[in-house]
Image 1 (cartoon, rainbow, N blue to C red):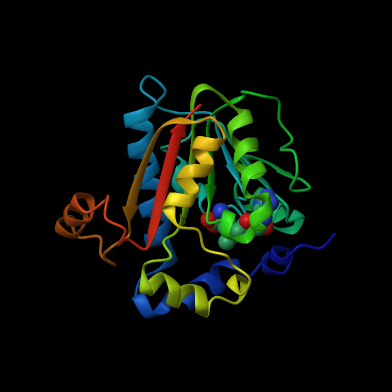
Image 2: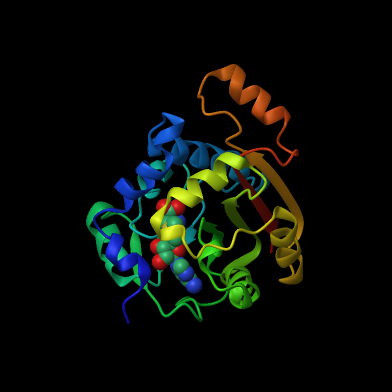
Length: 228
Ligand SMILES: C[S@@+](CC[C@H](N)C(=O)[O-])C[C@H]1O[C@@H](n2cnc3c(N)ncnc32)[C@H](O)[C@@H]1O
């Protein structure tokens, strides 16, 4: 079956960039910010596991994966878009990729240290959110982490970017509180959250202020993670 993102196999980066051009920043800036955040999460919450065996659910064309070279050990990606997965394989030959039907993830229980879903849930039908998070929980080992990164619906610039992005037309944005509750319902514990991408700037002072405000729902995106 053809999926929405199949048609963005070769244009994904261009379409994302055109939706955020108003910020004056390249897509890479946002990808690097997410990788930095994940590195912090791994260092703080997976002690002794500095290169986790990681699953990235809804990985698309794998645009994020070059930024994970100093974060992940073995990296696997799955997506419902077979064409995106084919592109991800071409661009990231070191990672393992698989297309699947969006139901049960094609892995045994407890085989990853870390499972992420980055800007994916808002493309999943809300009635499937719970089973999606439960699948993330199932494939993570006891003590491992599930981490979800999503758009913050309270941030006006996020809303602007979503309104300008042609593949976000049907997006249903989730508040952090809703995502947190789904992690709890899936049996995850030690839930933590952080808002980030408050300032479109990489200068150290901006990053320090952003970090001080990490619990205030201002940043363009948020990350929520919990322990299995
Ligand atoms: C906006 S893209 C994000 C891609 C990637 N995570 C990134 O940040 O660059 C959303 C991706 O989620 C995928 N997707 C949508 N529903 C899914 C589901 N139920 N299971 C897995 N992937 C899904 C889409 O095919 C698409 O590749």
